[in-house]
Length: 216
Image (cartoon, helix red, strand yellow):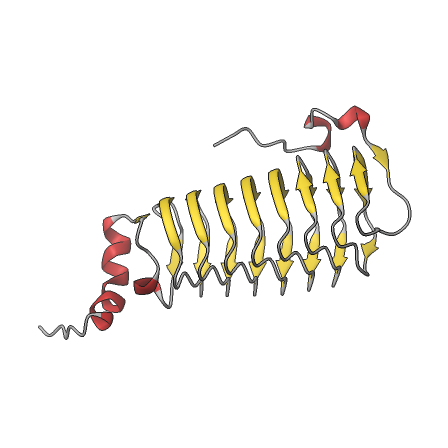
């Protein structure tokens, strides 16, 4: 797992950051900007964020469809009802943040670390995730149907109602999960790595899908 900056001062571009004032604008390029606190609403479609930091920010229903997030760092943020569909995230870190009721479908996440985050009712259908780590996170009612996942891991995370139907997986390591609550596990786990205990836990779903009746 790559080293994760824990504090704002740990960022290699920390000394270059300038504070942001005002709203967000669509198709605007934000380079080495610090968004500290406050609530951002409205639409900023196609905006680009390069080497930016977000601390204590709330994105409340914000429209950020097709936005680009490159080398961004988010700490203690709340993304509620935001539209992040078809956005691009690369070399991003999200710490202790809440993502609830957001549209993240069709997005591309590469080299992204989420640590201590809560994801609830997040739509990631058709997204492409490569080298993504969910560490000590809660994923509840997260939809990854039809997504493509490569080198994804979930150490210490709780998966509750996570759906993978139709997903394509390669090197997806679920062994470190604290809990696997996968209502349709039999539909999209090909390519995943499980431990023996998890296999036994999911066995009833596999048996049901194959029409097998188990009696002692």
